[in-house]
Image 1 (tube, rainbow, N blue to C red):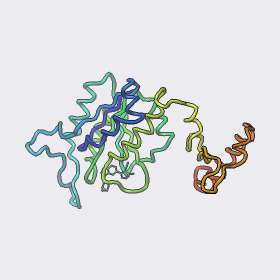
Image 2 (cartoon, rainbow, N blue to C red; image 1 turned 45 degrees about the vertical axis):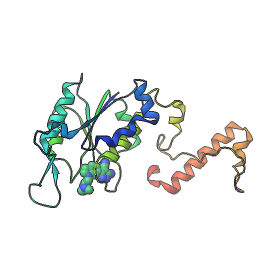
Image 3 (cartoon, helix red, strand yellow; image 1 turned 30 degrees about the vertical axis):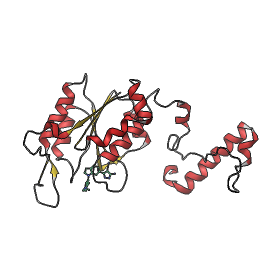
Image 4 (spheres, rainbow, N blue to C red; image 1 turned 90 degrees about the vertical axis):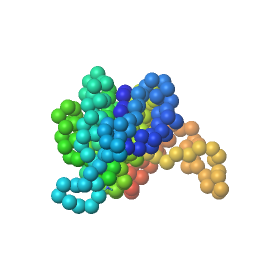
Length: 228
Ligand SMILES: CN1CCCC[C@@H]1Cn1ccc2ccc(-c3n[nH]c(N)c3C#N)cc21
């Protein structure tokens, strides 16, 4: 999978050089290319924002640099990417959305700042490819970078070969619409706290049943909406 990321803070994504995704890049499983939106400006101040039409506080990201960035990535790719724009006004980013994006050969993440990106950028992107306006959650961030990072990690780890043991993906929270069961490791007793006996029993069937009950109870208590 190829992922292009456009941001006015490209250094934000240096962290993608390390850990699991960094290794996946080194193994050629992920081709992540980070771009500075200001590379598509042409004035001395490398301007990317301007005052909003209709008035109001703050600044809006100008459409021109984004249009040139979209065209530059398209020109350098074999086919149109899926354009992902993190926005608080988007539909929820969920594990289902991550799974769908993980099937795509090429993603373009556009990270906005200020009050957001001129709406015509989304319209233009939709005229040349599929656009996904996705929200990380119901809270406000200062820009799209944190959200894009989370989305890139959630999608990247689903690419075959990125995660060592693919079986572990199936048991995770939100994969089957349920929260994952509690986990324990050595020592069996820690600061007076023990491990549920069933996990030490060696009875795999009983362990699986216990884990299923724990997932269902935890989901019912913490995320009843997932069971609706
Ligand atoms: C604060 N400022 C004025 C109010 C509107 C947002 C703006 C900041 N901002 C600019 C671009 C941009 C993109 C995503 C997000 C974002 N916030 N919360 C989420 N779940 C997000 C996602 N995904 C925030 C962004």
